[in-house]
Amino acid sequence: MPRTPSDRDALVAPSSSAGRSLRLLSLLAQEGRALSLAELSVRLGLPKVTTHRLCAQLLDGGFLARDIDERGFAVGPALRKLAFDTLNHGVVRGLRHEVLATLVTQVGETCNLTTLDGAQVLYIDRVEAQWPLRLTLDVGSHVPLHCTASGKLFLAAMAAAEREALIAQLSLTRMTRHTITSAKGLKAECEAIAAQGHSNDREEFIAGLIAVAVPVHDASGRTRAALALHAPSARMSLAEAQRRLPALRAAAQRMSGLL
Image 1 (cartoon, rainbow, N blue to C red):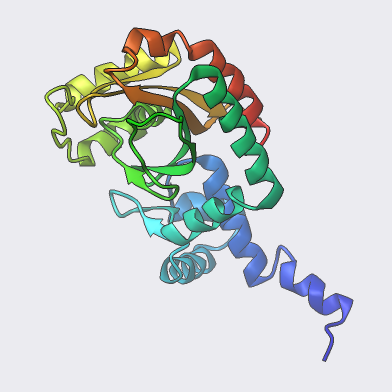
Image 2: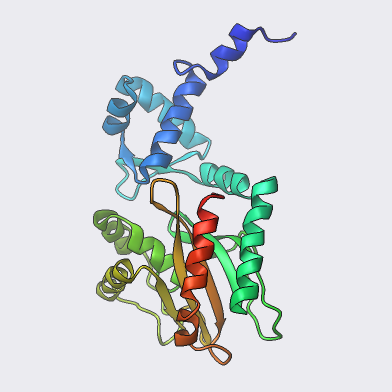
């Protein structure tokens, strides 16, 4: 039986359960940090018991996750997957891929587009340079935060308190002899990245591989993605990669309108 207009309106009305759930998820996504039950209740103008019920339902579905200290709620894996699938949908994905392909032609090395996925970096898109010596990481792959150019860039873009809390939870595994394995060293690196506006990977993730990354901002100026170039150090030095930064920043500017 076809739904009447009033039925359809009820499905998306702000006062409906679905509408309240969408408002809650939208608030967390826009805020970019975990919020407590009390904060969510106040911001949404809902009773705590109602907010708690919504959170419990969204936790069960994987759309929310408990924060590090268990008192707050953050976006969950199901919501991140939904965002990832949306980012990779149809025409917009093709336009982003075209920006990457043009950039690879300009800089002569492999480039990728990544985003923050919890406590890891997620590859959204990637274009390989046509060289016999190269590293393949498929779209959908995850890499660590502490030893990659994109990962350190995301850490540097966080508010200090959020960054400190996350670094305290990270396993700073030594991937190569160049990997930063102390929280103090990683925090100092993040401060330098925030000041200079780009991040470097000095063979910290994989021996013999260097990278540089720049932020991709959304309309409000927040870092939503990272655009990175990486290459074997035998073919391109870090200094040479840094000379490609103007091309990366120009591509990041074009990419910002496609998020």
